[in-house]
Length: 458
Image 1 (cartoon, rainbow, N blue to C red):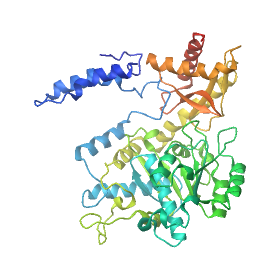
Image 2 (cartoon, helix red, strand yellow):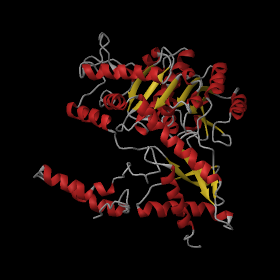
Image 3 (cartoon, rainbow, N blue to C red):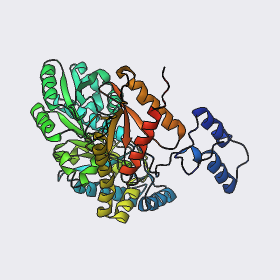
Image 4 (cartoon, rainbow, N blue to C red):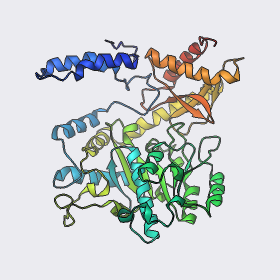
């Protein structure tokens, strides 16, 4: 059994060790445990293996512990266990969710007719956005996608979605689930800062003009690999020319639109037909907290599905469940509302700004380090780099980055991540919590250097 010391962010145990520790938790028996016994079992067996997102050394992913206001909302939501997709099930929950979505549309500067809905995660938000885009294309072809499916298109094999090489893998899930298959995804390259290459996009669309029907183009407002923000206005212009739906995947980066010095990166957001966002990544609210916004509220009508006892067509009260697939969802809006009201927008913006500045300053520091190579200039709170010791063989650098990552994760004292840029393995630091300072990440850089010097020669 593993114990979590103060200098660890998780046990560092192998998956086999974790499985051994957790077996007693699933030893289901006829006789139950007292809450005191159960709490002791969880504390001893499970907690050491959970990641401590609140530590300064957690520098790898998009997670945070709930802040106090969110914790209050989550406690109420759990206590009352409201299903919020229907007025009949939760009058207060249904109305508060609708009000929250409208307030967020205003806060983010979306169009005056915009509306939103709460989703389980960004993956489902992206999937629903593509479904609605495809539904609109079907209408333009003279049929109802919900009734006829993709076979209603004269040649479904022509349908295409264009994304960048840095787009999130959830878009593959989306086209798989929609029955379009991954061959429907057309990928274009990125520039030196990992943003979608607009000129290459235009060239690709010209090449596809006679062979494919591009019904949606996706830009990413904060890629999960490097945090880069694709330029929205020129792609919006292209979508207008093409008659294609513009979806902005803002799951990671959209929150930073609220930070004045970074808001210019998100110019043109109001022109997007749909936008996805995950507040749980930066706002310190419980998972899941995701949303899908549409520029025209009536576009949600493409999701409507009535039943005889629930979400009836004659109902006049608000039923958020008509905007998405789940007929049961948790009261996710409440922790988000109580968090923002407790912190206030000034504190929310400060919470968002601090990690951005920390990553920016780290990049400036690494530029002067001869043994470090930046893979991009950071747009947001992610920085990818490679360790390049003097005289190190080029063909072994990928192996070195992998070795460093594995050593750090095995030790359990800090957390970093790996990614690929232009086919090369790179180390990746993420700052989500304001606790992750430039100084804390420089300590990680020194740790990385020390490990690099110990890599065994193979």
